[in-house]
Structures are given as structure tokens and as C-alpha cells.
Length: 436
Image (cartoon, rainbow, N blue to C red):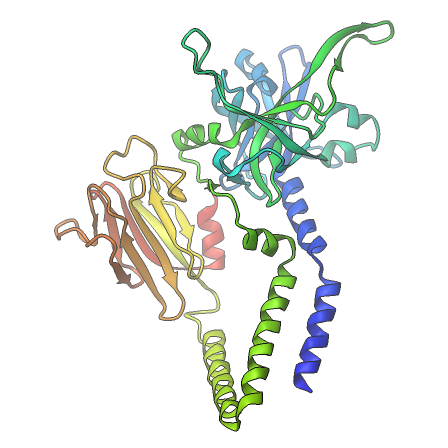
């Protein structure tokens, strides 16, 4: 009887909470992270484009040609709410003319979520490409809402373009992807997302031609619909590294199970429970002893689950990694239960990325994670060149061996110039420490 009730509940849950709701949450993240970028020139002429939030909400990535007026004393602005005329001034902190990329620092936090990146090695032709931005032609309908709410168009990756290797050609061209998602002037600088809500590129170019019209003068007209180009996310990473802006980038393609989990997570859960129910039923049907074993196992699992749920370190405490010295000095990084963070210089091998001017930090130097079962932090050296130390006066840790740390313990990478401390923070303190 209890199994029948559980079955009916799970069936109702699967029908009522389909993957469309999860997709809507991904969609909300895409639109919330996308902002409108304005550039006011000395002649008060306003250029418009798109951008997206990185770091802790204080930085925006866009195209350089969108904010190029700042080179002649113009002012870049981020429009957050057109209805309330909410604008935030922004300063270009770094740009690359060849890649047509710029990173802007906002005078105050945008309050928007930061994006996650997916690198070129995770992409393939035919993958979904969703462009989000503010095409100018969409502003003619919708009033002030059109200026605040971005437009979303969906297509695929048509080609992956690499710079030419011929010595006689220009080699500083960025890597790009060709996308079929319709983009228009105003989309420039906006993000292109994959199916998982990760930014795979920055909308930059579209097949356009200048046409002299009778009523509106010279206009840019599309000469090939569904043909646009985006600079891949890997080109953004070096700029973020130079500015010490935190980011995450995924360089691996999801496997079949991961794709199914993303598209239909409740089906995966349901199938797993069905397999467990089938196995349990089979054992129960064999012998009375089997029924006793299953009953005892369920009882022990219930007690263990109850212990984990009701005996946390503190309901208001979160495990964190604090930077003591080095590029992350003063910064606080939240550690998620059981999920390791790899530290190093190579974005393809680590999540906490160090700039290249830290030679004693290896490409993949060490990993740290919080174990909620024994309330400890676990540190492991990943065969680094200069070693990982709990104290710089002691010998380096043995590579590949896990070391348990307690709250307040410290460790160093290569030398005492790069140090961290593990511990706990309240939610309020964590939010406060994340503000720049």
C-alpha cells in the first residue's frame, strides 16, 4: 500500500513538474544576466548594444565597438530598468580591439547573477545556440518594456571557425562560432548560451549591407538571414584573468546520462526508484529472511538520513575558502557540500583560476572540498611542481593523498605568497564579503 501511494505521488510529481519548469529557470537566468549597454558620445549621440554580467555582479562583458565612444571621453552606461530610468555608470577596465571585447566595471552592483562559461572544446556543430540581447528593431514595439527585457532567439552552431594558420595571413583573429540564431544590430556584445545556460560566445557580427533608402537614408540591411558570428568564451578568459575576476568555465561535453538528467531529471529519479522497487520486490519474494534484511536496511538508512538532516554543523553556517595572500587575498569563495574545487592556472583543469604571473602555482595545483559527513575540509595536492604546504616551514604534502583540515586551518601553494584559510561564514557575512 505504501509503495502504491509513493508511485502515485511520483507520477503526479513527474506530470506536474516537467522539465519545462527547469527550462524556465534556465531561461530566467539567461535574461537576468543580460543587460543593455549604452554609450553616450560627446555629441550626445547614444549608441546601444548588449552585455552580460560576470564576477560578483560588478562587471559586464560586451563588444568593444559598443563602448568605443569611451575612447573619446564618452560615457558607458548599463540600463537596468527602463521604466524607472535606472542606469549605472560603467568604466572600461580592459578591452581587446582584435577580439572586439571589452570588460566594464560598474560604479555600483547590478544585482544580477553572473554567467557561467562553456569553452570551445565542449562545442560541436548542431548544438543549440540561444542568443539573448537588445536588437534595436525590437524597440519600436512594447514601450519601455522593450528597453528592459531582452529578446531571445534560438538556433544552432553552424560552424566552428579557427584563426588561419598561414604565415601570410593575420593570426590575431579571435576564434568564432557561426550561429543560425537570428541576431540584429543591438545584439552586439550579448551572450550566446548553450542548452545548459552556459555562455558559449559573444554576439559580434552579422551578414549586413549598407543600403541608401529614400525615406530613412543609409540603413544596414541583412543579406543573409540566420548567419551570424560570435566570439567564443575562451577569448574572454585571458581578460578576466588579468583583472582577477572570478569565473567558471566548462571544457567537457556532457555525456548521455548528464543530458538526460538536464532535460528530464524527474524521469531519471523515477527510473532509479523503479529499479530499486523492482529489486526490493524480487528479494522480498524469495525468502522471509530477505524481507527481514530489507526491513533492517531501510531502518538504518532512515536513521542515517535523519542524522545528516538534523545534525549539520550549523543551519546558518556555510563552508568557505578565504584568500589570505596572493591574487585572491581578501576574497571569500563558498564551498558546496562534497563538490571539490580545483585550484590552478589552466582554465581547462581548474575552477579557481590563477593568472599566469604566478609561476609557482601549477596548471592544476590542488583541490579542496568540504565533507558534510564528518564536517571537515579535505585538501589534496595534485602533483604540483612546487608543492602544497600546511606550514611553509614544514615539508610539502604528499601528492594524491587527502589531508583533513579543521575550521581555521591554513594552506599555501608553492610559497607563502599564495595562502588560503578554510572556515565557516553565516549567510549574511558571506553575502557582505562577496560585495566589492
